[in-house]
Every structure is written in structure tokens, then in C-alpha cells.
Amino acid sequence: MLDRLGDDLKSTLVIITSKSGGTPETRNGMLEVKHRFEALGLDFPSHAVAITMIGSKMDELERLEGWLAEFPMFDWVGGRTSEMSAVGLLSASLLGIDIRSMLAGAKEMDAATRIPTSKTIRRPCWRSPGTMRATAKAKRIWLCCPAKTACYCFLAIYSSS
Image (cartoon, rainbow, N blue to C red):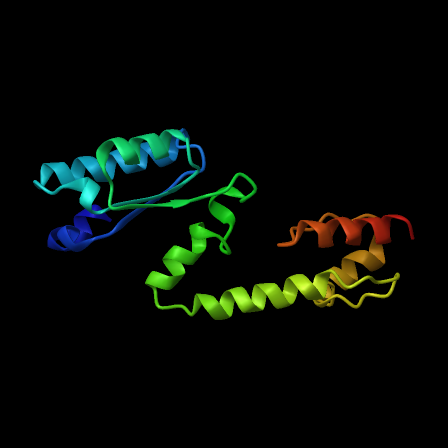
């Protein structure tokens, strides 16, 4: 990828996302990019942005080297997988995605998944055919849901039926 960027590297923004700053794969990738910048006589810190927890190893490195910017990641964020935090929203906004609409939709879904229910499935994320089929065959089912509380409610309702 770095080879393909060629001369465009001098106008490239590098976003390094690491909750702890200690994950070897993330750090090694960052070091490879940093070395490429240096080999071309480019100032890596003026192209680098960190998304990390305050006080992490990445936070310390970013501050020591004087990177372009840092966005905080909170301890309750699910690492690199949370698109509704700085992890996803920064990239989305740089790509021109309307993050205000994304967040409004997330707020709407959060409200919808908190509606108290009986054993009737009324929550939008539970209406999918795959979920319906799985619950018809099993009393307990494991789901990957964006809302942890919705999954707990889902499991509680169906494991007691």
C-alpha cells in the first residue's frame, strides 16, 4: 500500500487507532509507516493522528513526538470496532459521510431497543428472519448486537421461555 501511494504519501493523513497503544500489530504497522515517511524525508508527526485512551502508550508517544492531533477513546468503547465513537466517526467524516445523520440513527435505534417488551418481539433488531428462525429452534441464542443491553434483554426473554 505504501508503494502504491508513491508521491501522494506527502499529502497523506495517517490515523493510528489503539486503545492501549500496546497492541503489537498496531504498533508494528505504525512503525512501518513512520519509517517510510522518514526514509522519504517526510515528517511523520505532522501527518499522524492518534485515536487512543488518555494515558495510554500511544497517548504518551503522540505527545512526545507532537503529532498533528489526538482524539480520545474511552475505556467503554469496544476498541477498533466501535463506529459510533472517534474510532469510526473520524474516518467517516473524512470520507464525507454525514455523521450527524449516523448519530441520529444510532440514537433512534438505541431508543427503540430500550422499549420494554413482553415475549412478543417488537424491537427492530429482533425482526430479522435469521434471528426469528434461530429463536424458534433454540431456547438460548448468542447474538452480536450493537446494544449490549438489548442482547441481555433478548437472552433473558428467550432463555426463560
